[in-house]
Image 1 (tube, rainbow, N blue to C red):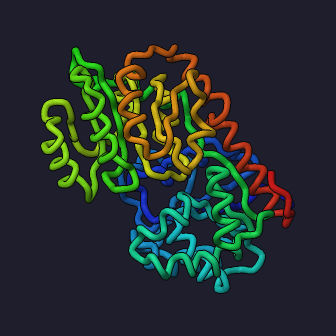
Image 2: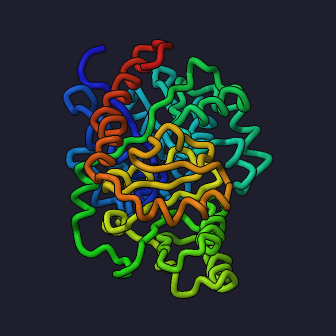
Image 3: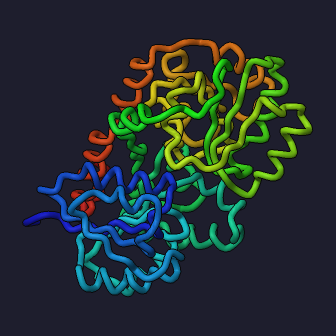
Length: 371
C-alpha cells in the first residue's frame, strides 16, 4: 500500500450530537502523513460546521436525511475509490450496507455502532424492521466498531455479527480542549447551592424521570438539579417536577451548545440512563474534573467509572440507591486533576485515534485481526 490511505468519513449532518463530536475529534487527531480523509455529509450546515478540522475536504451529499444522502455517497465513492468508507449511526449504517453493491468492491467498509441494539431498536421508529436489517446487513461490514464490551457482546450474540469483525474502541475525549472550553464564561448554575448536573436528550432512555424521583426521595433541600437538554419528554418531566414538589430545586434550561462550563461548576454530574452506548457526556464531565454518580447500566459505565477515584456507581435503575447516594456524593470532594487524569490516560483523543488508525490500516490491507 503506497501513499496516504484514502478514507471517506460519513455523517448525516453537522448538528450537535455524540457521534458527530467523535468523528470530528478523530479527524482532528488523524495523522495526515498517513491518511487522506474526506468528510461526506448529507448537509454541511449545523453547529459543528465550524469545528471541521482545517484541510479536511467536506462534500455535501444532498440532504440531511440519510436516505437522500446515500445516492450522493455512491457517486462520491465511485469517483474517489477510497480504500475505506467509515460510517456511523445505525440507520445510516443500514443504508450504506444496502447500497454497498453499487460501490467499488475494492473499498472496505467500517461501521460504528452508537448504542446497544437490543435495548435501543425496540424504541426506534421501526422496532420490527431495524432488527431484521441489522441481522442481515451488519455482518456485511468488514468491521463494526463497538464503544463497549456490552455493545460488542450484544451485536455478536443477538445480531449474528462475526466476532472477528466486532472491534471495541472506546470513544475519545480531547481533555485539553474540554478543559479550555470549561474555563470560558460562567457556569450558569445557582450560587449557594449544592449543584447536581445532568445532560442529554430528554428521552426515556436518559432516565431523567428516575433522577427526579431520586432527588425528591433524597430528603436534601440544599441539592439543586440542572438538566441540560431538549427533547420529547420535556412536558412530562416538567409535570413530574411539579408533582414531586421540586419547584425551585430543578432547572431545565434547554439545550446547551457547550455544557463544559456548567460541568466544571457542578459539584456532581449524574448519569441516570436506562442504557447507553458509551456516554461521551461522562467522559466530558470527568475531563472537566467533575466526579460522576451513575447507574451501572448497560453501555460501558463499569469500564469508565473507577469507584472513589473519578466517581461512583449504583445498581442500574435503583432509585432508592441513587437517592441515598446523592447527598453524600455531591459533597464528596475529589481532586479535579486526579479525576481528569483517569480519562486522559484511557480515553485521550490521541490514544483513541491511534487505535482507529491501526484499524483503518488493517482493514485496508484485508487483514482479519483486530488492532
